[in-house]
Length: 362
Ligand SMILES: Cc1cc2nc3c(=O)[nH]c(=O)nc-3n(C[C@H](O)[C@H](O)[C@H](O)COP(=O)(O)OP(=O)(O)OC[C@H]3O[C@@H](n4cnc5c(N)ncnc54)[C@H](O)[C@@H]3O)c2cc1C
Image 1 (cartoon, protein in one colour):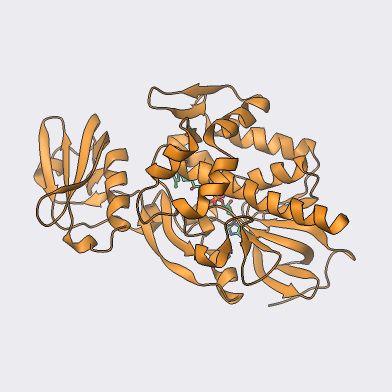
Image 2 (cartoon, rainbow, N blue to C red):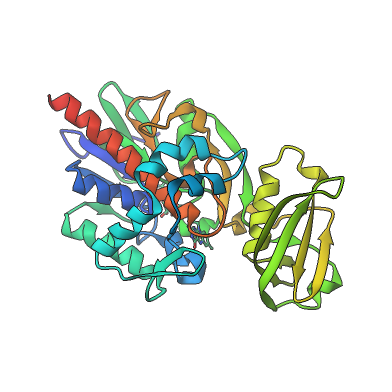
C-alpha cells in the first residue's frame, strides 16, 4: 500500500467508499443525523449503475410490507440478515423519503415504484442535490486503493493521497457491469482485513439456449410470460409470471431472471430444469447455462454476512469498518428489491455509526 501523509490532522468521522445507491443514501442519512462524512467515488459521477436500472427508469422499491419483502427474498437468502434493516427502512419509507426530496413517484399495479417521469436520473439528482445542499464532500474520479486499520481509525489510500477516517463504510457494490465502477474492490479490501468472501455467481441474468423455438423469435418480448423451475421428478419448485424475452443467445426478461436466481440459490442446482412459456410456446431448458457475471443485474456472493453484525452493519472482525449494499452477500429478485436492500443496509450502517457517536459524546 502506497501511503501519502494523511490529508487531515484529525480523522474525518466517516469515509464512504463508493458513491452508488448505498453510498449516496448513506451520505444522505449521515447528513440528516449530523455524522460528518465524505464520499470517495471511482467514476466521474455518482450513481452510474443506478442510472441503468430498469432500462433507465429506476424501479427503486416495491410497495409491499416489510414481512412480504423478506418472504419474497426466498429460502436460503439474506432475509434473516437484512430483516432488521428492512423493517426499519421499509419500501414505503424509502418512497416517502424520495417524495420529501421533491421526487414525484409512480406505483404500478403490482406495487413496483418508479419516479413518475420514469427517469433514473431523477433519483440520482435528488440524492446528489441533497448532498450538495448539505455540503457533503464528494471526491469523484477517486478510487480507494486500500483500507488500512490504525489504532485510532483507518487510512484510506488513493492513488494521489491518503485519508484518515474514524469509520469506513464500504459501499463499492458487486462485480457485475464493471464499467459502472463496481469491480469487486470492497470485497478485496474486506478479504485483506480478514473477512471471508462468498464466491461470486451471476444473479438475475439470461439463460442460454439454442432451441430454435427461442432463437427464431429473437428480439420478441412477451409481457405475459411464465417461468417454472422443475426438480428431477418434474415437480414445480418455483413459479413466476412476468416478462420473457427471446434473444439470440436464449431467454431473458424478469420471469427468466427470477427463475435463474432461484436456481442459483439452490444446493442441487444441477438437478433442476426451467420451463418457460410465452406467446403460446413452451420451452424446456434441461441444462442451465446463465450468461456471464459481467452482464448480471446483481452479484450473488460477496462479503460473508456471518461476519457482519446485522444490528449495525459493522464488521465483527474490524471495529469501525461497515458495509452496505451489494458488496455483501445479499441479493433479491427483480422488482426494486436490490435498490431497497442497498438503501436499507446503508441507513442501518449510518444509524449504527450515529449511535456510536452519541454514546461516545455522553
Ligand atoms: C442493468 C441493471 C438494472 C438494474 N435494475 C434494477 C432495478 O430496476 N431495481 C433494483 O432494485 N435494482 C436494480 N439493479 C440492481 C441495483 O442497481 C444494484 O443492486 C445497486 O445499484 C447496488 O447498490 P450499491 O451501492 O451496493 O452498488 P453500486 O450502485 O454499484 O455502487 C457502487 C459504487 O462504488 C464505486 N466504487 C467501486 N469501487 C470503488 C473504489 N475502490 N473506490 C471508490 N469508489 C468505488 C462504483 O464506481 C459505484 O459507483 C439493476 C442492476 C443492473 C446492472
